Length: 332
Image (cartoon, rainbow, N blue to C red; front, top):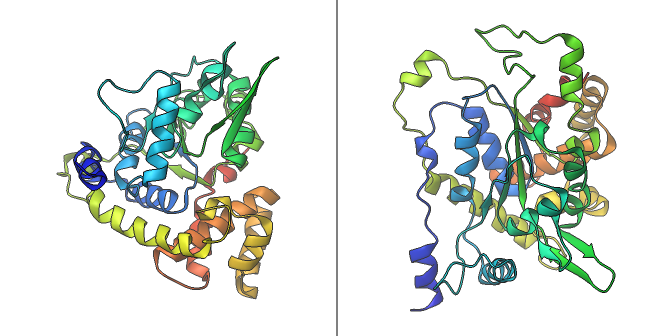
């Protein structure tokens, strides 16, 4: 059996986006995220479908390249997690660690350094459900790997570097009771309790998450509607076209996708018209966006343009990218 047959037989997913009812905005945002390698924060009440959406993300990602499959297989082999009888992993990883996980379990380490969840998510998805329940030290330890795409674990006699290039999907309730902003159930949280809850996810972590999207509870009509939205295969084809554009753009450079662009690359590939700069200035004033947050908007706008095969970033692309910073509007 050749490699093409192995990928064809073992690279398929049981979960499909056609199972998802409603949530058109979240579906669109996740398509953009996969197309450009962007991290996502989903904010919504319990039962709104955050986990259902996250679990289907690998099904719209392009197939692993052979080099990527080898990297993922090596990591799982080092961790002792390679399934018996499997010589090559061909599906993109999806990891969902529990919120009680330690910093070492998340980023790697131990007396004899082993890869953590961020490396086990390499080339795939790391889903952190109930994000505010994770230990602060564990979340803060994600900051550098999210920037570098790798993590170095140092011990007295050895330093080991593991790859850690993944899409982070965080999910959380909008407030402690879970119903702030809900259309039918009023929030019962005192303002000071809400502020404390919000501050559990620090500004530096939020700035490293490109896309913030609300995931509201479905209406009665949406709940009764039969699934029938676009399937994963259709979405994956659009994503593949956008990622191909990026591979050609960065062919002689260290990165492969828009999320990894440096300042020089932003100036080269994300030129904005005067009218676009005016919209960005308004967003900075209203949303209190940091310099890093502004870079995230430009990167997401470039990805949206790539999905439309547009050479330049236009005003609609910028406007959509700004909309994906909704959590910034709610910062206390």
